[in-house]
Image (cartoon, rainbow over all chains, first blue to last red):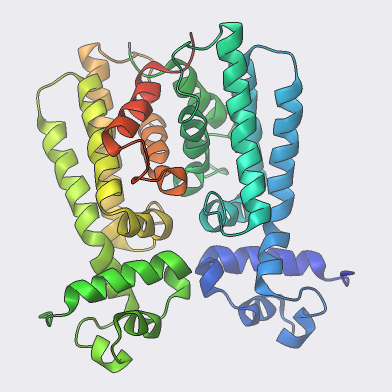
Length: 189
Length: 189
């Protein structure tokens, strides 16, 4: 539907309310209060709470997926791709921390909505393809468990939404390097 | 408060409802409906929704913490402790999958409640102490990033609640070994 002029405010308010109350606990009334408009006016912008959640989380999710697609198609060794993918992932989290946290907590991996389940699966498949190419080119372990390994990396990155402060001393690029460093080389001496 | 006899049913219903609707979206009425009792009767068991959530997630959280404490105090090399810790963690997730998922999605790392923030922090500190001891004994890398590494392991394990089926072909012990294997040795050839 065409969006009237206060759409960016509505998106920002929705992200804030979803973050504070969780998707299920938030009401459209809360969002309207946060923007300072009547609940009825909110229906000029969206038709349901679900549509509002998806509007909030779609831009960062699509950005991550599209950058991951481009990266997966490049011709560089897998370890470098993994390091760059981690930077893209942590960068998207940092840039859209509130929205991305909503996605990670309320949508990712839960399979609640077919459109999002398809995006989740595509992302896992892209990471898995990068790892498989690394095994084929000899840069990654031949005994690598391709079923589990993508989820280890994605889980470690998504878990950043629970403990990392993107405005703190460790920025997105450095944090990504630390995580991809552990993933690539392990912790054993 | 003393618990009347249908307490196990109340706990099971609460876990199911929290899992389906999220903590914020679930109501005590939903839980009462699930048990098949009046909402008023539920107040013989608990005084608030928050108390119900904590009752549901406390047993698995305390079990994990207590096993992690015992393990951290043992005198075995750090890589073995990490592998065993992963088995304990995945085992608790598997045994209490619905309750543990509620904990991971609604409580872990969010700092919403002081008691739980303290349990979260203690768990991270225990994992960090195991890693630090490994660096000191020479079994883990001297350049290990002790700030980030515990969260990589914990995040990868907690993320199991988003993609792993504990009743599927890969059981808890094997899944734990796969994750601790990537964590310990990395994916690079």
